[in-house]
Image 1 (tube, one colour):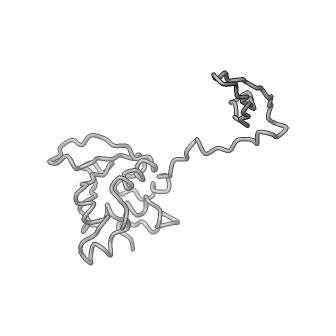
Image 2 (cartoon, one colour):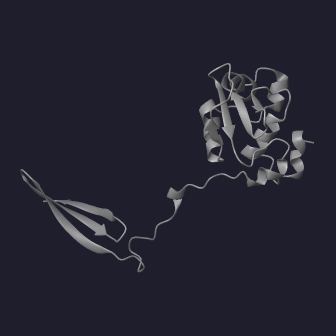
Image 3 (cartoon, one colour):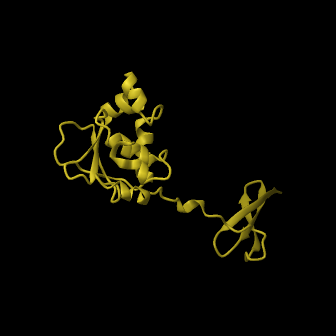
Length: 169
């Protein structure tokens, strides 16, 4: 059974939150620990790199779930899953980072399915520029240059213009 009773609360133990839960609840891994209250995690950068990202012993290699990634990639994953960096109360080193996520709490693995990856808003699809549902007009601009002009054609919609072609003259 996984540390902290994880197997009964997640359908996919290979997700980032499940791997993180496993690490923070594994006593042999001291790089990621719960804060005193149990509502956040403390990550020691130097220990994380030697214990988790590039494990040095056979025991740690067997426990590591994040082999071969860099520290900044690990932190980026935390941000993708809604973890926010907060200032630690008492820290002996500048390399300790404190993160909070409202659904990532000690002794509450039932909340893990709520720790979801944020969806980027920029990936929404646009309608095709030539479809009937798109109000498109064509405008031409002449850009004056010392030895003649260039005609630039734009497709303009209510949302934004699209450069279609450049024709030299």
